[in-house]
Length: 187
Length: 303
Image (tube, helix red, strand yellow):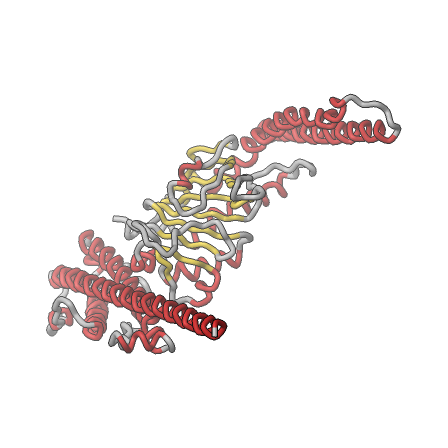
C-alpha cells in the first residue's frame, strides 16, 4: 500500500515537473513572439520614417532641378501619395515609386553638369544616400525579424503558442532588385 | 654617397646591438646550464650542500636585466632606423613609441571584453592613413591565477587598432569570431540597461563564423551593410587569428588575436634590410588592408 502511494506521488511529481516546464516554455515562447512583434513594428516604423525623409529630400531635389531642367510632364514625385503609418505593402509600393522618381531625377541631373556641381544639390545627394542606407538597414532588420517570427509561427511546437495568441506569418518587405544595393544616388 | 655611408654605419651599429642581445642570451643560457650541472653533480657525488646552494641556478636569471637592457636598446634603434622609415611610407605619423601601447582604459571602457588582471602593451603608433585617424599597438591581456581561474590564461595577444569610423552611430555593437571566448555581451536571463541583443544577419556564411551583439538592431544593420559583411568574411579568411570588432563611441576597435608581436626585430638571424622590410610591410599591411577593405576613408555620411 505504502509503495503504491509512493509510486503515485512520484508520478504526480513527474507530471508537475513536466507541467511546470511546459508552462515556462509556453511563457518564454509567447514572450519571444511578443518581443518580435514589437521589433517588427519598430523596424516598420523605421522604414516609414526613412521613406518619408527620402520623399521629402527627393521633392527638394526636384524643386532645385526644375530651375535647370524643364520636365515635359508631371514628375513622378508629384504623383506619390505619402501618408503616415503605412502598412508594409504600402511601404513597398511607395519605395518602388521613389526609386522611379530617383531614376527620373538622375536622368535629368546627368544632362546638366552645372546642377551636378551645385553645392546644395550635392549636399542633398549625400543626405539622400545616407537616408537610403538607413532605409536599407530598416528593411533588413524588418525582414530578419519577420523571418524569425514566421519560422516560430509555422514550426511545431512554437506554432501552438502562436496560434493560441492569434499570430500569423507576416509579409516581408519586398524591395526592387536594384534597391538591394546600399547607395543608389550617383555622385 | 654620404647618406649611404651613414646608413651603412648605422646598420653596422644595429647589427652590433643585435649581437650584444645574442651574446647576453647565450651567456645567460651557458650560466644556467653550468649552475644546474654544479647542483646536480653535488647531489650525485653526495657533497654536502647548504640550503642556499639550491638557489644558485636562479643566479643567471639576474642576467635577465642585462638582456632586457640590451633588447630595449636594440629595439629602440631598430624602430628609429628601420620601422619608422617604413611606417612613414604609408602613414602620417603622430607618435610612435615602442615603450608603451594603447592604455587598458581605452579597451576596458568599451565594456565588451572580459576584464583581465594583467595587461601589457607596446609599439604604440598614432597617425592617419588616407585621412583616417587611428591608433594601434601590440596588446596582451591575461587572466591570472585566482580563486575562479586555476591557471593563467592569455585571453588576447595580438594587434589592437582603434579607427575613427566613417558613419555616425550612437549605439554600441560587438562583432567577433565564434572561436574567441572572451567577449562580453551580458546576454543572460535578466535583461539590464544597455544590454546587447544578438543580431542574425541575412548572410548565412557570416552568421556561421561571427556573432553580432548590438544595442539596436536597425543600427547594427546600418553599420553592417552587405558590403561590410562580405568584406569581414574576406578578412577572416585572409588573416590568422580571431577577429574582434567593437563599435563604440564613434570609433571602431579592431582586435586581431593572432598571438604574435608586430614590428619585432630579428635576434637570431643577421639583419637583412629586404627581408626585414618585407616583414614590416606585412605588419603595416594589416592596418591598411582593414582600413581599405572596410572603406573607412569614405566619409560621405559623416556630416
